[in-house]
Length: 257
Image (cartoon, rainbow, N blue to C red):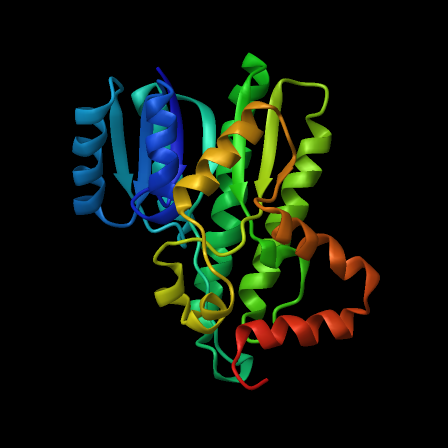
């Protein structure tokens, strides 16, 4: 059975992707840490849309847990035709005060799990000569991020990784999209302790971002940046020194910098 696999499925952007892909007739495999939330979401989606929904609870900071998801797919006979690597989180803290274990977990979820799923599911896509992958990066990927250094660096990794794979697959019908949203409404702010940024920049709905990304993915685009101001923000750093860009970025991330 062909499925769309969505990580980080129970909240924010991941949940918005669930609705969009189900609405467009895709069977879903949902991945998140909370089995209770996954079960509830499965019921909600199947009541609303005529699709099949399955789920796996997994902590994607663990390679063994990532492999558990892959093995589950193979044992069930699922063929992943759409992969949405939506799991991820941030942490706004001075680097000297950062919890190193949390930073390593962030790198594992934001980068390592994304690479793992992209790699293990891409062979079937290439074999069948069809497939779409959306890797959720961020507007943060275009600039250094003092006080959110690990997060910004991890999202820059996602952007560069996705663009590179896109080039390698350019002669196939398998397409990889790096989604680079600005602030949107989700649980990210509370977990990342990044309310200062959201006071300065009005967030948009996760549904708008997901719908935008879905359309861009269908068209086979490589990068998707929602909104003119965000596109300008991504482009503008090319005209300024890296030091200046880091200084401006810092002011959006920490009050009084």
